[in-house]
Length: 128
Image (cartoon, rainbow, N blue to C red):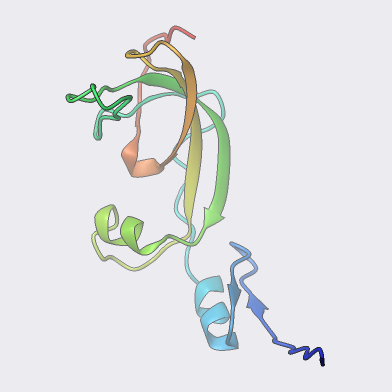
């Protein structure tokens, strides 16, 4: 039996650290602008645009009020984000936010990842 080792060269975007098979794609990604960071650590936010579902019996869904726990990015947007939230406009590097909240259905503390357009700032106190 022989072991065959293949070498492959990748190019990496200096902004989002995404690897590409060819240099031109990496350069195109690197010159893509970065969206403005909408939220900071500790900001109070709500997901009022798209309700979450906690269990199979939760048919209506719920909205929560929570805090931004972590900011991830800039990232290269995936196709769903680009089509749904950017509406096909030119791509930009985006930020993702980890939000901690207490589920109003099951009363457990949870975290979830959201992009900026999915959240809204709120000034109300959350009960965590």
